[in-house]
Length: 358
Image 1 (spheres, rainbow, N blue to C red):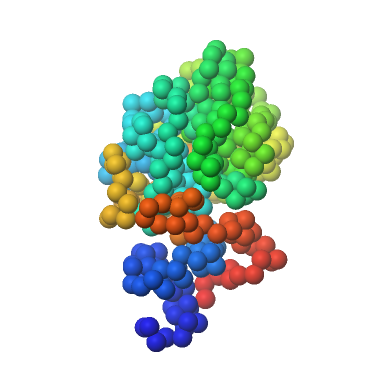
Image 2 (cartoon, one colour; image 1 turned 30 degrees about the vertical axis):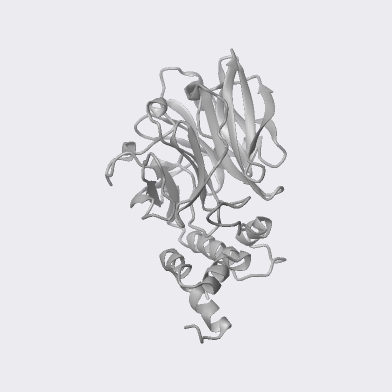
């Protein structure tokens, strides 16, 4: 293999799946350098994204597993009334990286596929039960961000943000809302939570690039308003379907889903029909107390479900993106220019690079 022409070797590498690529990184330094290069990481992420798009009947999500069972969706963690009774949480997923809290005092940004993990600086908030969270990629700053909000007073929430490059928490400011949902839903470059203001539930967004808050308009529908204000009905939660923000009421069964087909446009809300049902490939993360880098698989199992049951779970595509930003004792950063990757994912013709399987 060492005598193969570099172009031939590159074409062979492009045809390998994730597990074999990870093994190839251990063969020699030159292979590791090539597979970790920005161009190859871009290609691989672009390829996986377009393969998922072409398989229109499949949706890919990731959850923090509770117990191994292919039958009950309730065996997985959700942003529900049992959230505070668990120690291990998944705060979000973006470009193949996840933000997880394996214990109350530890937060990691990790790539489950490559089994790389970077510990981020611990926050100084003592009561985790008063927190809401979020994680996503800031395309303008070319950086991943972790966002937390904590109850500061009656009807007041203070937000802080940590950028991976700085690994320092920064206070964004206070907003006149109280926390209702815990995990921020990533959509259109912003995180979204269900919050309360003047005893009314609202959708609050936080733009990761501009670091600004705004309310997202809700459906202008009497039935929806009645359900949203009825305290006896199941919990109001958010999700994403076909890259669109969704809202639903959740207990044991998700019955009716409202989808906003044009972001931040009130008139674009509509009810999702049964024809939007697809299968979801569900990656279940092990609920380990302490993650061990590079050791064994981090997935408990991969199951098939209806996507309606997991509409509130983060979208997940396996990538080679590294969580290391400022370097670590074991590896250095190979994050590259992710702005280019985002253009590749959107099929921008101005960016050179393959968009389908060779």
